[in-house]
Image 1 (cartoon, rainbow, N blue to C red):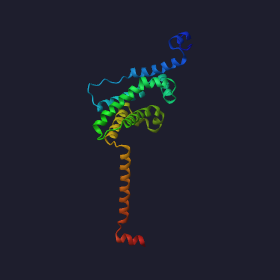
Image 2: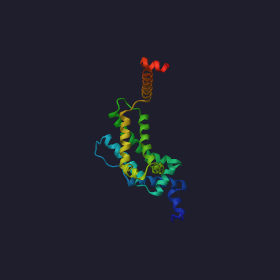
Image 3: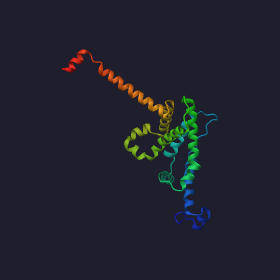
Image 4: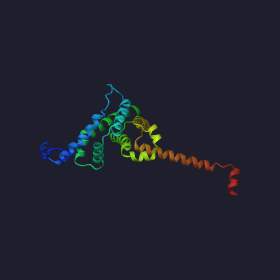
Length: 214
């Protein structure tokens, strides 16, 4: 209270206790990030192929370009070590964004995938999209040590990362298979390769066979 130059009685009056003050501070930090980089307004009837890059670009921009020190540290701490504030943060901010992403992916799946993609798989795809974006924020220190500065400047700008995540996601949807079918296909392919290798090994000419015997 002294550092903020506010009266302790005022804190109790408006927030009730320190826990409520902390919860509102976390929510304020998230709200400030959203207000700095709002989701772009696309034309009515915009396709999933237009909405996905807009969503990914906005998410990466919030994480990489328009972060503020205390808000970013507070949000990362809350995500990595959730407190009582996390549930309200999820319901008021994260869930609406997650549902929007699932809606976009559901539309794209309807256009690109022959069979219906179950809801739990759509959610897993959505988490994969979010995970790719979050990696560049949480793992930034590792990325900067693995990739030279010149290469990062040339290929790791926000727009380029957004294009990569978008292309990766669309490619995954175009080749999507249910888990059972994907495993069966992989197993069949491995069996075919084994048979082909065995056939090639047995197809020696007589000269080759005699040479091998000697």
